[in-house]
Image (cartoon, rainbow, N blue to C red; front, side):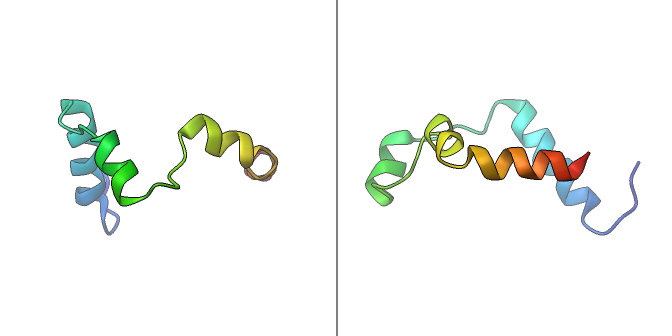
Length: 58
């Protein structure tokens, strides 16, 4: 077990994602934010930043 501040919240978040209950309503997302990007589009637009962050992490 991890004992750092927020570790219980982090564990609960991952348990929630693994449970399959993290259902997203894409139509509602588009209604609330018509400019929302798909992950593929976001990655395409931010590729250089992501690659730089990965290089810095190594």
